[in-house]
Length: 215
Image (cartoon, rainbow, N blue to C red; front, top):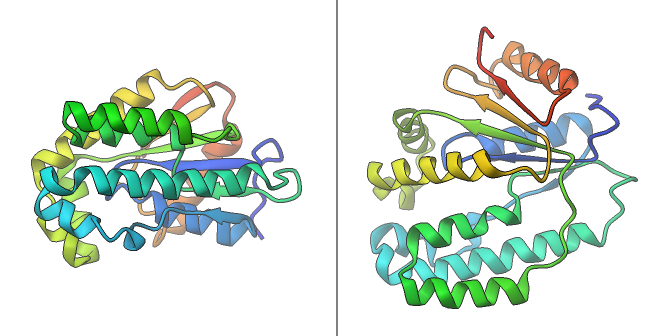
């Protein structure tokens, strides 16, 4: 069984759609016997509509994800992280990123009021693995996995989303961040790439480090 560093009891894998965060989070959890704390986009009934008509469905889509993420985090805050490592594919702090990207001013104001009332006291991750990739790669990966309602995701939206993630993690300082350029990496199908990532995780000493293939 995979042994993660003892100091990492709560690890979050993050990144825009197509970056591979959920696949990597599942893999880390499965190989280490850890608990997996995952988003469930397929449970959101508004998401297919959002990709067809974002202006109409942005608010209900956003609020559904907010409630889902808050409930997941609330469950985590009630568990004993010292008894079992937890691997998640989201942090609640990034939720407003999507709201600012998709909501109009009135909707955003309403969202911010709900977020302030709903946000639970969340545990702080011991490590965040932030996956990056070019927009072209994100599009190719989204198309390749063949989820029907994702087929209408525009390149413009992915550009804005990737830029928003980059800005968010540029300022994020709540936990150590390993920034991974996943452009040429395949953690699921390449054991060598996965082993390289584990080496970087074990070698983490600072609060912000970068991992590019060959560096």
